[in-house]
Length: 162
Image 1 (cartoon, rainbow, N blue to C red):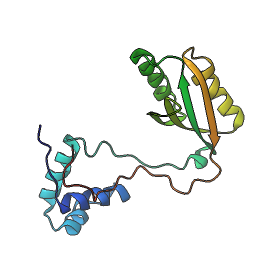
Image 2: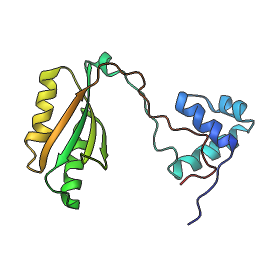
Image 3: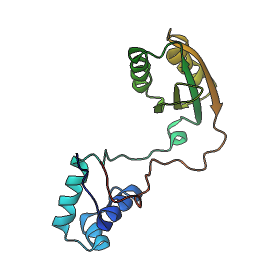
Image 4: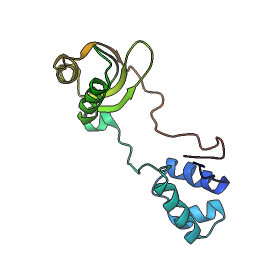
């Protein structure tokens, strides 16, 4: 299947929306040199194709009482597809898990989690790890300082998307 291509106007749209998803269509039109109608059509296509997967507000966890961030490597007992899927479902259903990645290397999953304090994190570890019979072990790193926190993706890559 051939992937559609996108041009510099698409790249500008994507880069601008990553910085501020509330930018008005007329401003996007000015930045890209396209008409408002063309910008609307392109944004619709970018959403339909999945390049724009969603639009979110980025919240400050500390402002909401989730002052601590943890990076957790999880090793499963068995790596059967149903076991992998089961753990992924459990982790993704947990509101304190911001990111869940199935990875290669020493662990099977890497999670980014937030918590109010250590007692809150301990309760999370009981739910996610100790109460799960397929979790062999987990290793936790406490984030001391976050220097960069983003979901931005570079928009200056190859001229295709999929």
